[in-house]
Length: 145
Ligand SMILES: [Zn+2]
Image (cartoon, rainbow, N blue to C red; front, side, top):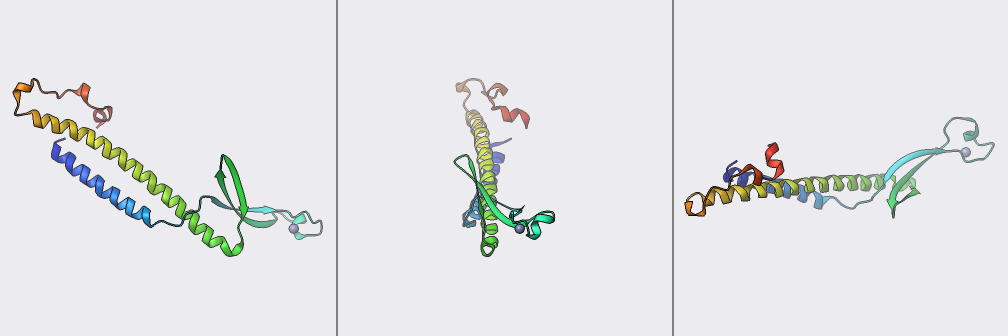
């Protein structure tokens, strides 16, 4: 690829990065955890739950804290709020993964751009010796593309 193509690629990546970062900064507040519904029997022998299948429904939130799973019952009036905030958390994490992937791509494109740029810059200076363009010097991921 020519230096101009790398420059274009880097500008594209920067635009994508800005877009994802802008979106990420809008995602708040966050609550880490998974909401799920469980059914339990209360243990009272004359309760309806003793005979039928299932039991009393409880909506809970679980999250990891210091390598332990913590679970708490969610009051009914807080359920939609908790769902919104845990959705936010997952969205935030997904955007962070995208940013991390874009950073990786920017780093790779910069590595390639640097090599191409140095090659081009040496072109008019034969006193510098042989062209350094050499597959062995290219980063591994260049061989794949
Ligand atoms: Zn019961």
